[in-house]
Image (cartoon, rainbow, N blue to C red):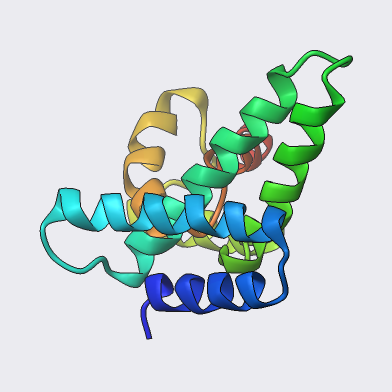
Length: 148
């Protein structure tokens, strides 16, 4: 069952429960997923669906962060949306899991002690492996901490 079907079913449940906030959030997520599928012109893979959900979470988080402190209506709506979106997002990798992937990449590239000069080559191999599974900022920070 695709994520579009899962989100649509959850939206129907929210409508039956007369939960307008949840229904609106799910409607926006469903719209984003359908638009991505239309842009691609064929069904999305699971990774692509997860990327769309993460993108929606990230943009809603930006809305929350950039909203003025006195606009509690915007902030509460964004927080509610983020909570709903996270139900459909894949679990992010932990720092330990990221370190394991980095160690594998370093072994593959034959780098014993990574330096700042090696960072570009490492990231080029590393990012496709963690895409959609870990936050890029977290991966960058973990790699930087491992460098000498």
